[in-house]
Length: 252
Ligand code: ADP
Ligand code: MG
Image: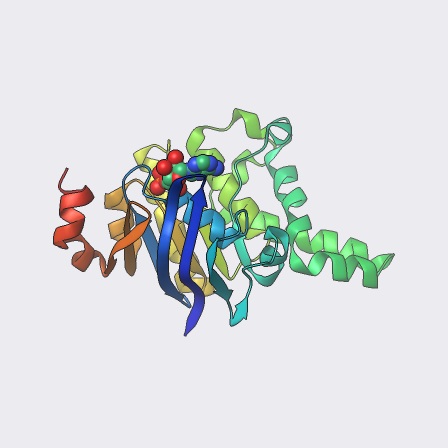
């Protein structure tokens, strides 16, 4: 069952073709990894999927609906969520408050708040608190709940970014280089958490990542990009032994 489709996506910046006729599908509960050298078009493709860029050509279909013209927040409400770096103004806030603030992205929030102006709001806040507690424990950040986000290590911050995105209860989570700057110990935990979320909550992931070893370890399907195009697509084993990929990227 397909959850996300990229159909013939193309994006240019002036004379630069950043993404050129990119097509692939992400099935429900699948982990898809996107790899490729610097400048391959990975981040641009990611932004096309999340809605931060509009393609020159092609469509993005999520859960059977064409969302190509839909802004990022609408995609989030439909369950297509991406992580965000902890913004400067959030570094002075505690971990728990960061999580609670993120719950405002939750699709149910506006509906609930509007429907139940008095008592329902408290229920919703309690619900958010319960969810935040559960997620912080799951991410092993619970002991740090009263710490300022700015005092977290790089890896812990990545986990908090993941936690904040999970507050929105995504169906599909887009991750752009989640392992960047994370020490090996936390990398393992982060990877394990992604696989747990897939196994236990039927979540779907699209992960753009530089760390090839990590991607090959967790992905069901790997999309290899080069010069804006998809060079290779298949199981990690297939992509790793693909001659064009080896030549363009993996061999070097
Ligand atoms: P990757 O994430 O794989 O390193 P990017 O998608 O960031 O690749 O970049 C692909 C190409 O598009 C590069 O040549 C880059 O310089 C160019 N590019 C990306 N974003 C922009 C932008 N906003 N304006 C102009 N050129 C861009
Ligand atoms: Mg990039």
